[in-house]
Picture 1: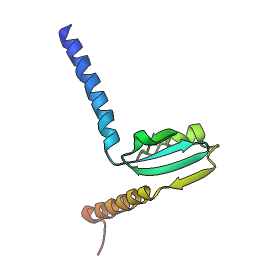
Picture 2: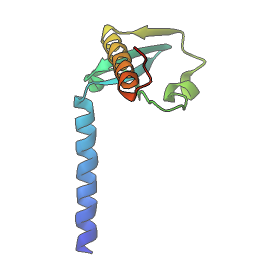
Picture 3: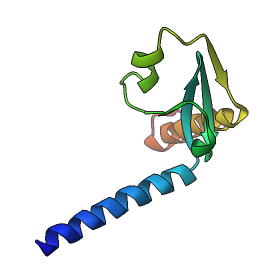
Length: 104
């Protein structure tokens, strides 16, 4: 019984710590508010007003698509998000070079 309680406490602490750390990591995300979907790449998740969506790298549709897809009237890419795009493309170029698929 004591082991179960300790395991539960550790699990709860790690979940709350993970969420706190996630907010401190520079990450790409989108915020939906009143028809506007805005993309960011920063650590300011907690200061944003609206519904926040983490960007996924899988082939699935993003979270806002099924909920707000038809009601999005404007899309804004903040300057911080341009840094994410540049970093993402740089990583892809490096991956191609190191994989041997790039002919020079």
